[in-house]
Image 1: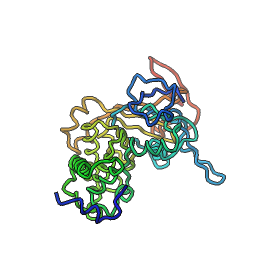
Image 2: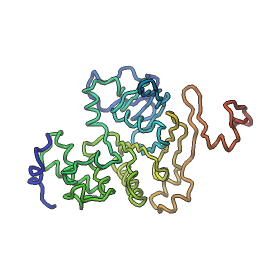
Image 3: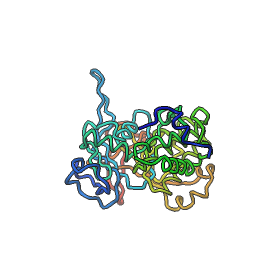
Image 4: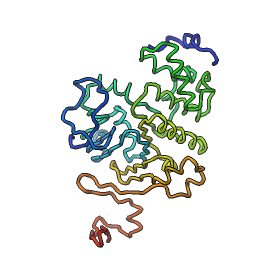
Length: 336
């Protein structure tokens, strides 16, 4: 239970489908919540999206947000999902967080079919397995709690002593580099400081996946770079899987894998080059932009379909829905 009022807390502190490869779960929520018969993966995938479809209906209008989306994310990856407004990226994030259900398709998290769970199982999943960082700090923090109290709040459900809660909360604030603001209220902190506290709150219950929705959308570029570095730091230090949905293309230089989503499907992926990864910690923000950091790949879905970006079509002078496809010297050539 949360404390009944802020004074009570102040007294405690002083200023100091089954074809998709899945991973066999290390921890199941309940025996009847686990999907049976899902094949084990060769890769250590913590997330598998298999043909996700989402249709929103408003009166007589139907909007297709996801169109058979397929995606795999390995345990411990740091991933950015980038796309224009309406591309489906926030819908995907909400599904991974257990906040929305697909119209069709399956979503496996840690070997469990997320939407085969009961409502009780989904509540437990959201409480224990995922942490959320939203763009609006009002969704992340209680305005009448200090930074320390905000981080402690989720721990009241874990039957920890007051001393254990305080020690864990202070440890998280220190890891994020915001422990000097432990006794400050959100209104006394900058937007960047609030987001750093929000990251600590999201990590409080030791989730397996950290989901961040536009975490740098309301801060300046300097603060954005700092928050990006924090995500890299916690990914490297504790090995948590981090999925960031963003419009911020500068994130591409800081994450291992960039997933471009367009019209409800994955269109391209960018994979960080190993040499760049090794040099990343020694690079400045300015030098990052000048270095070729990632290899870009188009994505073939299970039906062997591939999306071609409008920019690529324009560069090739293709303005029709009919194209020529031929193979020359082991290369597939698409032309008018």
